[in-house]
Length: 110
Length: 113
Image (cartoon, rainbow over all chains, first blue to last red; front, side, top):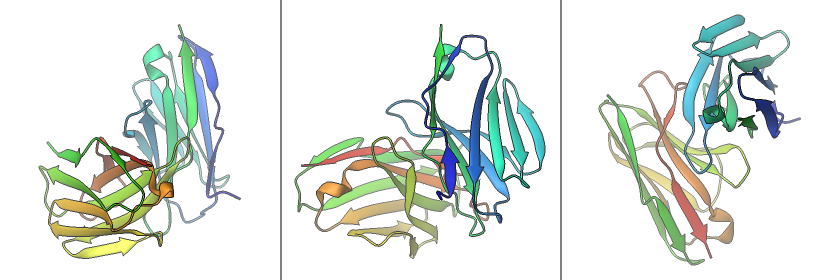
């Protein structure tokens, strides 16, 4: 079992729809969870982090965390073509280092 | 504000040649520094991290090494490159005492032929 699992996609959604990106992790000691966006050929950019169970909203982005199920998700409301990128999930493990998933490729269709 | 630089942006090297990639951070003191590698279509693999000058932790044994000669400078090196060293090399920093919140530099794309 991989430490961090993400559906590689590609995930396609029409412009204006909600994109839902999911991530499961194996380290029960993980306390912090980070979402990065990576445009093709570019470096990852931090967009959200969440520490507590429940939802955290920041503009069009909502991160959801369920530690009991070892599951974290990212919702993007009103998706725009500029949201087309690969989204990386990164839990912080018991060693306080990030472990990155291989990412979900999102395409928002105009 | 903090800025992180990496150079070169791209590099094509023959197998067996040496390597030196440099990363510098501006606008912060005593940052934690990281080297990652991303192979095509893959996730990020942590190679080295440093919490201070001269303090290097290696995560993956291989033919690469890292050094931190100054507080905000991190160098990735190899004496002899392998084909498998090709990839996208990313330097990242996090605030002192906060390892998890990491910010990435623009990266160096390395192709070993």
